[in-house]
Amino acid sequence: MQLSTLNKPLVTLAALGFFVGAIWSFKNAKKSNRKEQTAVFMPKISKATHRISNPESSFAPKIERPPSESAMFGASQKISHDQAEEWLARHGRDAASLLAAFRAMNDTNYLNEAMAAFPNDPRVELAVLSRDEFSAERRKWLDLFKKSSPDNSLANYLSAQDYFKNGQTAEAVQELLSANGKIAVR
Image (cartoon, rainbow, N blue to C red):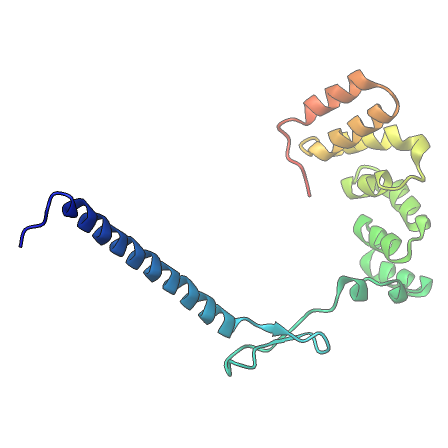
């Protein structure tokens, strides 16, 4: 049986539609199958115990969540002055231990001691610059930080910020240009 000239395009179009529909159906079946598989293995988090578990899966791992950052560094975990002094005696009162005591107790006496003993330590300089208490000496500490960390762009950015605050736009732009190409320490 011969098809007429009008029926040939219709049959071709119907066959093309059938194949497109079959391919579309096949792809959607794969997506829904993946969703079903994912749903079976999705962990559920219990708010009461902070455990991750999946009751549908017998091999799901039981993972303990770490304590929150506020629990680790909360205000209730301050140390006493005697504990800080004991710890400093064991660690030699170096720049890092003085800064640790300063941060643990928020006692600027430890920062002042670090400033006097280690003025060329970039960690001490950054700690000083992060406080607003030393605004009269800020330019001095910015210059020390730039000198002790010549490859650190943070020193230039902090200096530019200070220049902008003081209305010295040309100096601020120069600092920003100097920071270009340096490594920013995180």
